[in-house]
Amino acid sequence: MHPQEDALGLLTEVQRSRRFARRSRPRLWIPVALLGIVVAAASPLYRRLPMSEWGEHDRSGVLLGFGGLQYPAAAAGYWLVALPIAYALIAVYLMSWNRVRGVRINAAGAAILGLALYGLYFVLTVFLPDFLQANAPGDLLVRGLTPLILIALVILAWGLILRRWSMVGVGAVSLSASLVSNLYDVANPLVASGVDIALENRLMVNVGLTAIVLLIGALLLALTERR
Image (tube, helix red, strand yellow):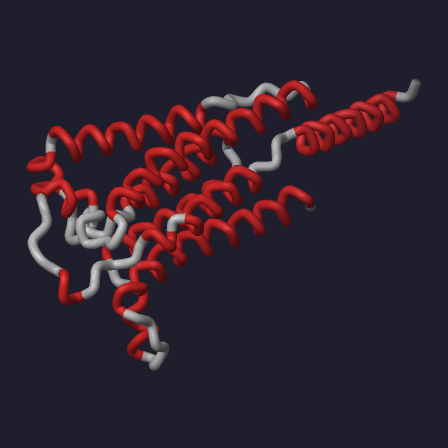
């Protein structure tokens, strides 16, 4: 066989192998969409107390950000239950994909990282509240939305580990959105422009911002992976 034909055949085989490898990779838009749904589902729990009931709350409530909510126990409990379930479902999905496609990927990495970050936050909140109070910037801990930052960090780190730069982009944008949600009342510009949002419901807009970013990011990932 002619050397040029050998080279062409080798190049064709390499391209075929690359296409197969790309098709065999798990669809990462699914975990991102799941986390976006988890965030969106938390929105109804972020109804603030009426202004007439505002007052001094215990330190742990202020630091967790749940002290000013109508349903503080439900909001705190939601994250303690929803995040482990979500990470477990992600791990199951990836392990199932591994078995079907024969592709090796760290299926437990996202779950372990997410649970570790949330566990660290919980330990610091319960046992080192003074440390958090002294080092947390601005109002980072007063709205009860710190789990949004932890979710964004998991997506960003996972994208870096897998070298999936589209996922890194989604993680970076969702991290920015989650920081805005934690540090600023997102409903303020809407109210200033004439949108009527009850004071008790304005924190839901903060939750919705990060949820929308995650769901749009999942859609863009799906389009990228399909292409």
